[in-house]
Image 1 (cartoon, rainbow over the protein chains, first blue to last red):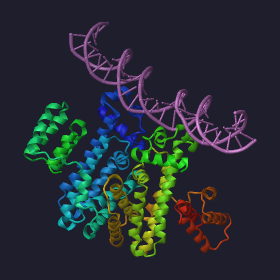
Image 2 (cartoon, rainbow over the protein chains, first blue to last red; image 1 turned 60 degrees about the horizontal axis):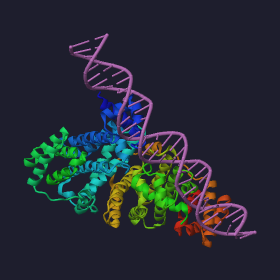
Image 3 (spheres, rainbow over the protein chains, first blue to last red; image 1 turned 30 degrees about the vertical axis):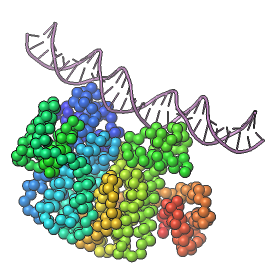
Image 4 (tube, rainbow over the protein chains, first blue to last red; image 1 turned 90 degrees about the horizontal axis):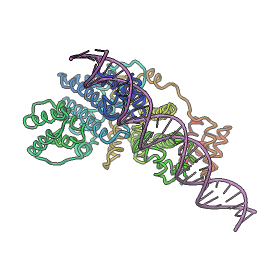
Length: 277
Length: 277
DNA sequence: TTGACAAATGACCAATCAGTCATTAGTATA
DNA sequence: TATACTAATGACTGATTGGTCATTTGTCAA
């Protein structure tokens, strides 16, 4: 196991117990059995560690669920499989899930909040895609409300899984939530979250840039940056804009890479906008 | 406004923005326009302030909702009225609601966590009482699941109200959630949270305010209020708690006197609880 | 054995924290 | 005006924080 991984695992455990702020770098290094200096050889700050943890586990969680939803053929069981994937992933990475569920405190810096918001949007898109696939036009009036209901179900029941030490039957839980979701999808009629409201909330920035302008800006940015991840992400996204051939999850991940770095955040938004995500 | 109230209001605003840990006593006193020493004349520690805030607003929130549920006669509109009360209370005390929704971080000490857990149970009881009243035996298999669904709905939609600066139509929201809740209550059949599981999680719980504590609070309130009706009602109820001798109708009337005044609503709720009404 | 280089250390720093207390300001009574 | 008292102040303390860096340790090839 690399030193970076060792630190991440030690930190995750402590963060889940105490939260980000209440866990000192000292504690992390003691728990990992290394010195404070060694920590700063792997991460240039505590913030970078937190960022790394969130990126790592969020992408893992999202790709877990995305894969299940994408690979499942029968629409009949899809809701059930979705909830199963989500709760099993929560159980597998319970330390991270604890942080994800409760630590939305504004203690975090602006950058982190926006990052979490972006991941939240990714999850929204997975849920929305699933619901549209199963119910199509039937839920045109309630699709955005349904996203919120699904997330609400997951949130409340996650508390049971994460914060109480009771053996639970996730199969029954997933079946129960699939039944509830289906009931709402098939019979609920009142619209609260309109298309307009949803987009007001989720896409506050909208600057129109042409494709060519954007490609030129990306080219320039590729020259500017040093980080190889950023360079590659930008190159791949450039290809995607010229000729789309990557899966949405990959594209979204690449954009998140950009959003990690303040210098690339803006261009990340523009690319996202251009690719209609 | 008393110094204590001034500090609580200043602190609440900052806590809502930054969280408990990230807000220093220094910041609070600067924001309130007083010195650090003056803070410690009103509160013996930062923890005492946080405890006071949670007690004050939680009781306010709970008694608001409880009163609406108890006083509403027509079962048909009850769910709607419940959601209306909850969301309006959230909007009224949005700073506290923000803290309540997100700050469940374990940064808090054990005492606080258990306190929040107890308040959560009070809310559960209000919701359960309401659901039982409307649906009775019909939901015997799903009543505990329904509590979690209702709380999940409130949680997700609260995000919209609290963290985005968009004008929202709470009437439509409450109607929409009442419809959804009714759908689940009438058609959902799968049981996940059994009676046994529910009680495993929520170990038996008793009145969290002792008689002596309550009497002390009443004494204090008697000093505070000007209105002679309130003073007399409080005095009579104090006697009733020490030695019951009034008829139930009179007691109920006295409590109603208290509930009419915002400043006494909370203590009214506690007295009601203590006298087993 | 030596020398060169990277890996790792922990004493140290400035900043910030909750909480204290000697001092001062303000006010009411004599 | 003088006295007595409370309310309020803010410089201070000791503890803790994230982060640094001169120093030591470990590991090679020569």
